[in-house]
Image (cartoon, rainbow, N blue to C red):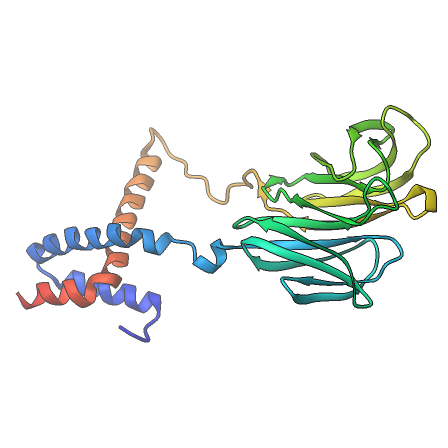
Length: 296
């Protein structure tokens, strides 16, 4: 059966089964079902390389620097300016080394842990003290499904500022957020006015107000970076397309009287399901089971 398409293989198996006497079919069905059950884990298994990798974005949050970025010693980008988001980069799960250099001089080198199937942002930024050494903070992106008219929003505090309140449309949405922390929310898709102020205060405004579009079906990540004392406050923005939750409009509605349509549909589905199981199992067992039965 080598070289045949899947549909040709199905037809061949079904034709073979149709030519068998009833006793032979009764012998084949239990055998093919057993083969199908035994093979199910292998058929449904996720490929090892897909299951053991993750995605990493790198956010350049150091004003006035142009960084060359590498992951595990392999260059992924050069000359990355402040407020830029690069990636995603597919990496093996486990501990990965992020390195940033400027003009060949090491700026920061830190290790992050990437889980299997994870999606991460690795942000290189200033600590609370603007004269302190750069730090790297990683954030796990929530890439689960959201309603199609909603937007996921994350705001991360990666600026050289103490604990702050993040105000959205004039109201405190995230309170007392420290450097290196972030908060996530799902909101109606719209454009929001965002500003950052010291925790518990309404002024001075250290960033904003700025208009932030939260697009339906996307995770929008906002990283506040820079130092208000040197007037380098800025934001880095990134988006990720998300799957949608909820069901769409039905394409087919079965109607009838007294449940007859449902009964017919159930019978049809059961018969089709049985034939599909037999056909799938036959693809695996036709070369052994069918020929063995046919010779008897």
